[in-house]
Amino acid sequence: MDITDSSPQRAEIAIEQFLGGGLVEFEGVQFSRHGGRTLEVSCFSSWAPELSTPAQAMMEIDRAKAVLDQLASRNASFRLAIEALPREFSYCYNYGTGFIALAKEVNGRFEWCRQ
Image (tube, rainbow, N blue to C red; front, side):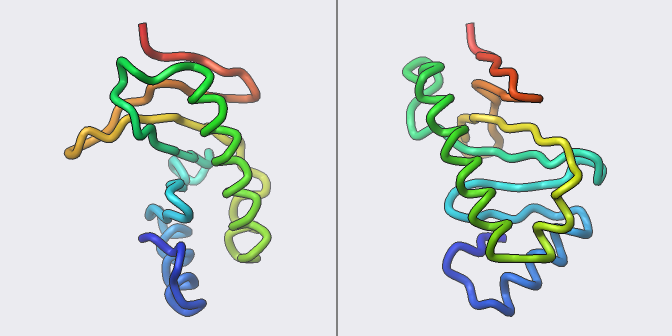
């Protein structure tokens, strides 16, 4: 559920769904808890995979980190739910019916997934 421009009540409902295993989106970045053990943060390329670059991926992952911090500062329930979780950041291409990871950052280590 996208909560970018939502009311505080709608944001709370979305956070409750997130806590139950759902997906929440804020400022174009998606957040989910994989089995409750990892916070997965996904941002998306506006370029086709063959035109995307590692530099773009790093820049978008940095933006996703800032969006994560912004959401955590705005919502205490979200902040408490994620503060102890390890984080995985993915830079993806959405092809309409799904998406593929072009790059990932796990434990501070960047990996370009495209050949």
